[in-house]
Image (cartoon, rainbow, N blue to C red; front, side, top):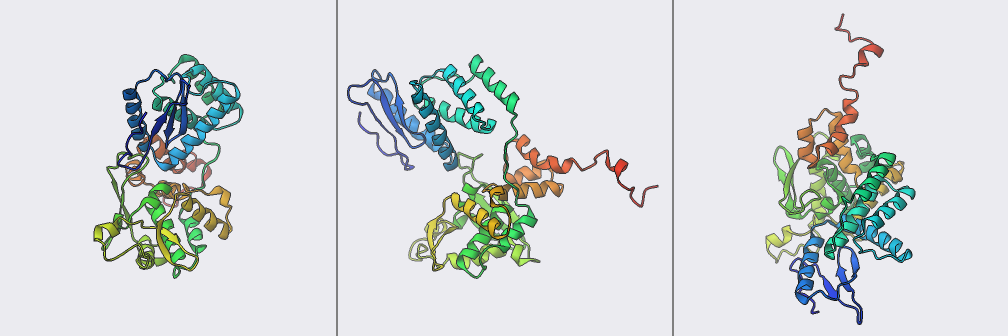
Length: 377
């Protein structure tokens, strides 16, 4: 089968049939190689359509999801092979057995759901039906969920303002390029409640200073905006405390960033504005213009936490986003205001940040166990 032309967005897909076999190997960027059984009778036209479907399905997921899906699929594939079973069988009973095995291994329900999503996606790419609503499979999943609960076994510690100040103080000096970059990443990541992938995806043209107010950020694409409609976020400046001010931190970093060689002033302004906002820095302190991976955010937060005397294992790339949401909830933010800043689509997820503060607000036990206010008789 001829290989389809490259997709204009840069993703690739190829399909090939092993000599003498009746299976088809799909090379996908999302899950790696998928061995599709019983595909010898599929015509070239069907294979070409599957190729295009694989391309678009792959592009529909972010980098973090792609890594999680590939890891989940490899685990399921290896387990099936150890039993002599075909991973792409469309058999819900086989999937129920795997879910039971994963539950016995002690994985969280959220991890199991990622496994199921990856396995379902592999079947979709191969055009093989798989019914996740099969009664037996659904009963097994419901039993696991009831038995283990859906609360995550471990959550990242939120980098609330008090913690964020400690992380900032543990960064290299602002006068250095890496210190300026790290401080700006921490403050913008917190203020805009950015996911780590969103933080490293920012371009120079995505951040604009608004006189008398602060910063306006454009998040071009996110977990809840896979179609790339874009979302604007505002962050107020803090002129009374320049060391805890997103605008001041960004200005300091941009003074260093503009020294990078990738900002060739002979090219058009639009090309410069599309360069990464945050980039790698050499050991000599020279910004390179090379964009960062989302893992750089994890290393930044854990490294700053360790230098600040905090337990780095308690912090992750989600700590900045969780820190803003938690602090906003503690400050009495309304649900719509919180969701506008964090861009949550699920009210249940956003409410989780408000509930800890709501436990104490207007709690009926206050008048029973605390001294009455002085203005009350």
